[in-house]
Amino acid sequence: MADFKFKVSIGSANIELEGDSELVKDFFNELRVNGLGKLSEFNFMNATKETVIVPNCQSAISSDNIETNNANVDDNYPTLNDIVLSNKIKTESNWILIYTLYATDFGKKAVAKKEISSMYKTTNRQTSARSKNFATNIKKLVTDKLISSINDNDFIITEKGKEEANKLLGI
Image 1 (spheres, rainbow, N blue to C red):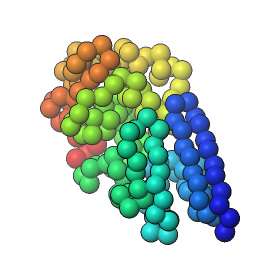
Image 2: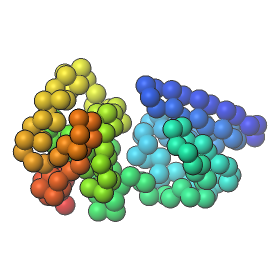
Image 3: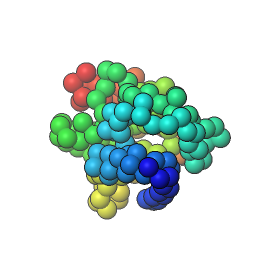
Image 4: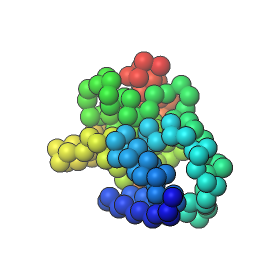
């Protein structure tokens, strides 16, 4: 098949696909239908060993290094898409706690407030009301000692926050 190049920009997210036209079409359809959470199930063994440059990263990722597991999900945790579909999480502050858990790589690193709020887009849950109440919900989580502020922009999830998130997820 012919080589094909495809670029998509949505907000700050940029996706560039290049290669065999059928493979690019399959990747794009998987992204369009299921988002990034289900892309991990795609069979990368059929893909050629190309190098993909990820915007805003100084290193390149080879398809040799792509794992078939969801890269951002610990084996004990469901994907964010699964959480959305299960409809278990009822309050926005609880959603932000879950987003913080995942964004911090399950408590291993700090995360910027902007990265947490961008997860609304990732899970297709962004609305103007949720965006307007985001700061209030963050403050509630800090007050409840479920997350902790490192500075005005960066947060970590506390042990108490991880325990609460695990309860919410049934883990």
